[in-house]
Image (cartoon, rainbow, N blue to C red; front, side, top):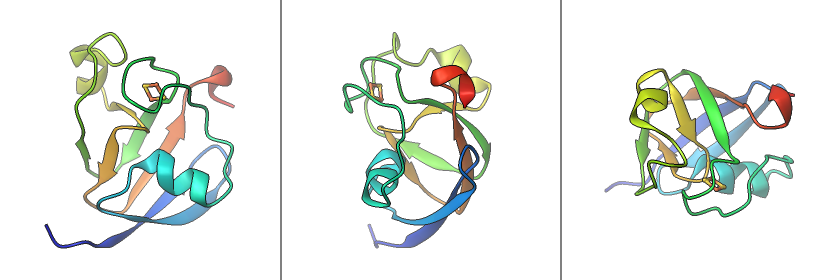
Length: 98
Ligand code: FES
């Protein structure tokens, strides 16, 4: 897969950061010193659940308990598992969405 840089806008902070297609949203956010909520970073806890407002992602393997198929169908994603496939806008839902 060819690596690409996409632009990710984090709705909670308004920051726009670069994310490679082989990075997760969480990795890019941490690299940009954004205090994104997470715990396991491996798709098991659901702490990093986020709303994808626009854009496409590709998901790494995850537990259904962290993100149910229904949540995924309604545009929710896990920042620690989602790799960008377009520019996107995402907001974390942890900490009451703030
Ligand atoms: S940090 Fe645990 S599912 Fe993403």
